Image (cartoon, rainbow, N blue to C red):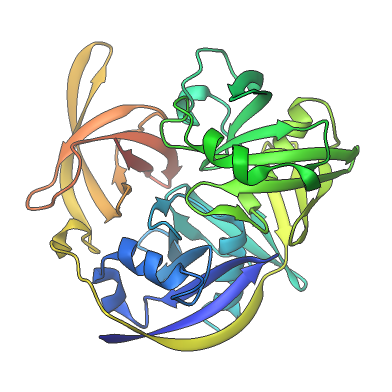
Length: 368
């Protein structure tokens, strides 16, 4: 039995258990899937949609790891990163007005905006193989027909670092059976990594309302990446302007798809309470599976029909992926294979983000 200090927070009712793993480094050695399932349970635990782990980073100011209530690790959470930023500022962990937070979706930059937090969510991903969605069609995927039981939907597919299927409804979203169709679309075979699902009504050129079924969590009060995806989808369909407000069950988010192709999300973050939970610790059977320090590895991939191997540095490994640095630029969607001595993990991965950092390249890999 161990004691874990935590902070309960929410963004528009999308609620989180935030654990500072910089102050409690032993937490990262726990079975995080079990930890998330236990703490997020609303009857037998603290209750939350997700846990957020504040960790050190070698390539950014901080690292955020995110686990759903079902124990699955996810790439990014818009409401969660606003809460993480508020926690950092409120406790004086950084004096910077714009933070750099490492996530599995890349480096995300939350910024102070009065009593709100503005987040540069990055550029939307529209290519089907990078979302990913198994649809053979040139991007963007707009109004793709999808039949679920007796009902016909038209889905617009977007990734904001995590996959989204956006559906514009003719009927009132407030009355729509989200809990019936949400999980069926989430687990549809065309989504290899499952998907988040947004159901939307258009109120005007600058106002939308939506409900969201989150992958691994079910219906939640709000979803920042989901609202960002909805803003992009509405613009792609010519339904709205670039600056819009979106009403969710928990309140409003402001979404701006800028001409620079970045999506900016602005909304509140609230600290509810702090506490200590006594947890019957389950430790990883192989703690080396997730080394916190960097290590050298070689990766292999096919280039113009020929096999190629290059050295790189692994800077972090999680349940679902890892970050690397190298002198070679990898392409998003590229499949690579690798081997790390004495570490158990899948042997192949797909590149989900890639960017140049001074004289080196950084990339995020998702295990497949």
